[in-house]
Image 1 (cartoon, rainbow, N blue to C red):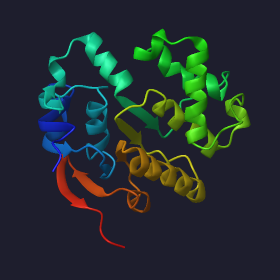
Image 2 (image 1 turned 180 degrees about the vertical axis):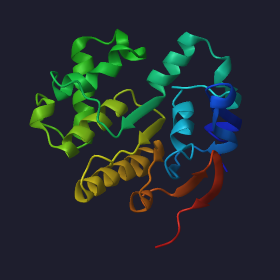
Image 3 (image 1 turned 30 degrees about the horizontal axis):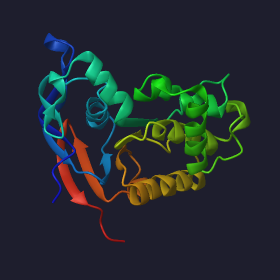
Length: 235
């Protein structure tokens, strides 16, 4: 079996101090291998979003280690950590987070400005962003602004933006939470295709069991602990 791409080892996370301290994670171990599609599930306050923030290098553990290909992420310099976040990780959020006064193309180009691709010419960045938009089914909508796009189209722009730096890992936090069930199914079909056809490792937080069925593995959190880690149940 492939070695883990990303790992958490004995990770705890405490917010606040003294009597106000809240232990969001209580010492979790988690391995995610290249090409997996993992759904992280659990009730509100279970620790799943805290774990996702640590995986995305948006937060750091109180104790324990986060490893990427065996390298402790906590030992990386701020510049190397920023490069890892920009070039190897892609993010998709529930609330699209598009710049409203900017075209779909410009939204997708934005990560290229802050990545190893920053040395690209403007023409090269635009061409790469166009390819990403085409990949998510939005060829011809490059000039559209947020108010000219449906919710599903906005999330497709957000996915294209996450893909434009060709990351190894896509982190999706409730990616269908603001969408109706039909549009949500379309977005999940797109993520499934990216996982199967491009081999992108996907880690998705969801509270929706139906959405989780698109993933190949279910990791369930409760009270800051992993209480179940199983392949998706057969239909």
